[in-house]
Image (cartoon, rainbow over all chains, first blue to last red; front, top):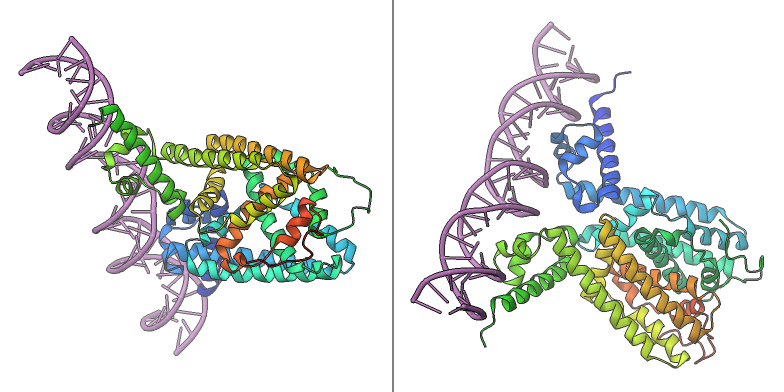
Length: 200
Length: 200
DNA sequence: GATCGTCTTGGACGTATGTCCAATTTAACA
DNA sequence: TGTTAAATTGGACATACGTCCAAGACGATC
């Protein structure tokens, strides 16, 4: 039952990464410190620099891991949906799902901004975003039959993050229905279900 | 010729605000410190707390001033354009004008994120964004004849900031033409000029 | 020229930071 | 049971931070 040294090591590493992720979302990238991470993880401060050479290293690894997991989840969900019409609906639903209440959402924005000033983070994040965008473009091409699917994917994925940012600042926006313009953007027929612009 | 004490005071205040704005864009909201601002402004560190009660106060005032000026500039430009078709083009051009090279653009993103954790900043920024959005909605209604101009304005203004963020991380995006989906979003006829999807 | 109010200076104070490390614990192994 | 390697502890170190303040400078006013 008692874990080996290596097992305990792995466990603490995960604990530290997890604590770092949550702190980035809660207090911001720049406000995460050695001691706060340790306290949040329920560990002693000295451990941080045993497992990670630097605090920035910890932040980069934690955030990239989080983004990587989320991208994989989204891609899996996208690929699973085969019916074209339902696919468009799902893509539209993604735009609605991003809310400030979701920690992951805030973390994404925080990482994007941090990437501006950290080259390795920027490069690796760019790869992940490109991956997501490519999959989104495939989807748009297949389900909505767009001929400029690439460009639309660029616009759509940028829109997702921008929407989060604006909703963070102006929570009343969350209530506002935006499916109308989104449908137009994706090139879907408005015919399906008349013009029901407001649903919850 | 020699300025009075009060005049010198105003001048220093402006210098400090200006230095703060530039530092926010260059190094990030959280990385701006008393001493850095003073050095950038060519002044002694003690002055910062003579003119501003706190560093955060300085940052809030500096960034809100910058945003306020830019919003006014945009609104003036929007109002000047009377021809509906040209108006749509101008709105589309705005999306292209936002690039990571522009310091103001980076500052905007930085302020949006900072507003998440500072109530006064958040509230005042929300007012400014709403003002901009309302004007944009008026424009869309008048020039593009949209019936869901409000929703489109929400999407469009969020898109502007999201685009900046993504281009910051992936500079290759700046080259990618996106006028196609943008035209669709704004509800403009693609007829004008066939499908010229790439122009510089 | 003396007085006054404003702006400026230079440095102090306590606190928090990132990083490091010698000593200690712990579990696996010989 | 004694040895070994990994993980952990607790505290040290220099540095940077926000804030404050007594003393000086300087033009306006009397």
